[in-house]
Length: 186
Image (cartoon, rainbow, N blue to C red; front, side, top):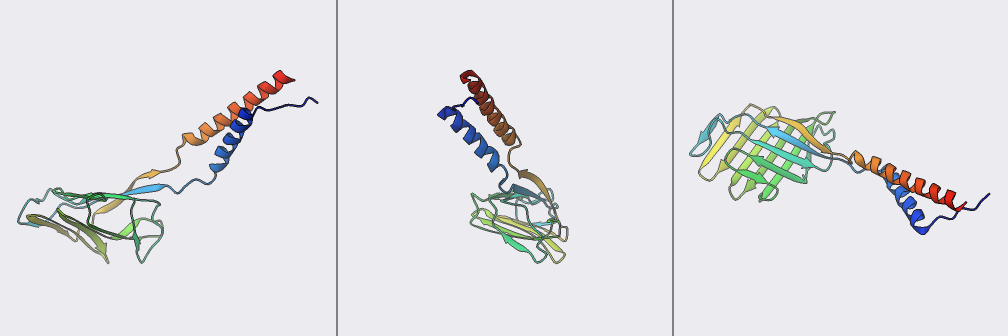
């Protein structure tokens, strides 16, 4: 039987491809974005809010919410809420708190989101069946009572689907290169 010698480059390439393929088994938790869409304001005072304004926003978490019938306080990786007059995001908030109650499937059934910035504040909650969206900005206030908004999942960020394909291709190229050199040396 002929002895086959691998070059350092081919051996290194094959090892890198093997490590890449093996590391795919432990994929990281996927980030997830929840979108809130409130109802139009029914009451407003002194200023810029109208019945066409409402609270809407996104909260991105490192992982999906789990079953939490009593509620869970979370720290988002990013958030942005608007009330038609102002937008408060993780970059502009001076205070932010997020608490979610979920059902057994992880769907949001109760919440308390409170945001404050130099421009004003946004609060949306649905606790114990009482829903309220309240906002205030310099010069006015807006509110919607007893008409809960809805939460939906808009994105998840899984491991890129092309990564396993890329690793397999690199591994196959390394194997083919090794076999070709082995035949040439034999």
